[in-house]
Structures are given as structure tokens and as C-alpha cells.
Image (cartoon, rainbow, N blue to C red; front, side, top):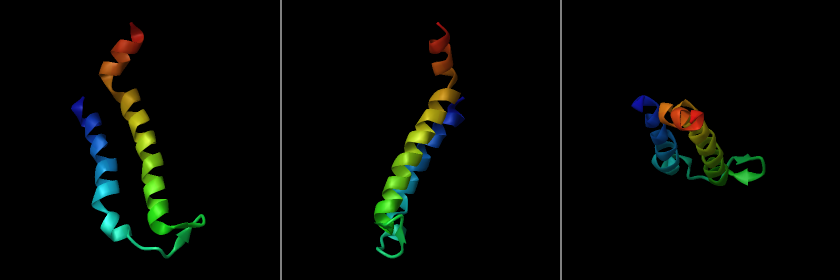
Length: 66
């Protein structure tokens, strides 16, 4: 099930690929400049995606059951 591991590219593309688009100060989101909010958002989303990938990966399920 290597398609689950393809989700690893989502944070990479989101964080590095769209920084030039998100490189602005206005608007402020939760009191943070937009670029800082964007980076923090992707850090949190990356952690969530890594947890999902870990839970869905069949290799990890086999190790947990032993």
C-alpha cells in the first residue's frame, strides 16, 4: 500500500511549493502575519498527516500486533 506513503509529499509541496504565493504580511490570521500562520498551519497539518500515514500503513500494523 505505497499509495498511503504518497501522502508524505503533501506537506512538502504545501510548505515549500506555495511559499511564494503566501509571502505576504496582510491579512493577519489569529494575530499572526499570514506567512507565519501559513507555516504554523502546515507544521500542524504535517503532524496530523504523519499520524494518519502511520495508522494506515500495513507494515506498522503488523509490527504492532506482534
